[in-house]
Image (tube, rainbow over all chains, first blue to last red; front, side):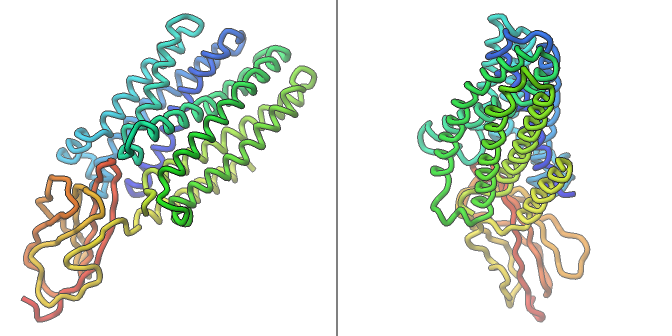
Length: 284
Length: 121
């Protein structure tokens, strides 16, 4: 398997781990005080995601030299590794490692003022994506800002799904239903922000509408289609299963299944995003 | 059903990546040109890109030979025009694989073919 393919897969997994970690921090910041039985399992999820993100992000960084060389021996090429170190790729890697450290501190200190450190970590993690890629060459701060908002929203949505599944299993039905309802209210605004920021990115990066017919454009359309399906699943949970969580055990199971379906779908979008941002550019 | 869906999604993504790995990206001009037939062996390979980039790898492979040769030394500067010296080449068909990194740290790759006519010195 070529370094390009492996790099994309590792990158997608690193996105998943990073956004899962950031999402746990955000979820605990908003709902942590209401959790009892599920707090520790969710914190453990956060720590494991952070550890995975450290490993995957670092492996992806190490593979950049192999991608530059077009072969695996590039990993050991001092000149290429030195070149990678001189680029913003190394800066983004270091910022992400720092972000994960801050997130780990924040998750451990949920419910205290130190939890704000975790939120700083989330902010750094989203900012790290503005240091590389197609938004780097944008004039003005709006495109990087839109990207940061878009990614923060993704982190909250994606990273909250497993905590929701955990709390549906561990918390008493009434508390679970109450938190899910509160989450849905917050998530409504988050999704709106995600959509608006995503639209700004799309309109800014595409040179013209004919670019939608290019591989880059088709992958973007696939993401939009996945977003539409996700909205359907989220609505199902919000309006059908969440109100029944108090009364029916079967509703809990259906809720968890739908949440996991959302998780798989967003994971596939992260994979598509890794392909999109690694292999294509809006101008091709 | 969820496992099947995941397998399909990963397969589609892998196909997308494989396709992209051989995609001809934004090389605007080269000398020798892509698919050119030249009478004399070129002494250098010139590549022009749509945006500034730095060459990170260039290999040359002659048809019928198993191994590709790494070309160098490669220019270290970011520029739209990049030039790499060539050693004395004999007649035959050649494949050039190149990789560059752009200002946005995007690694791009591509290939071009050229032929040196028999009887060339």
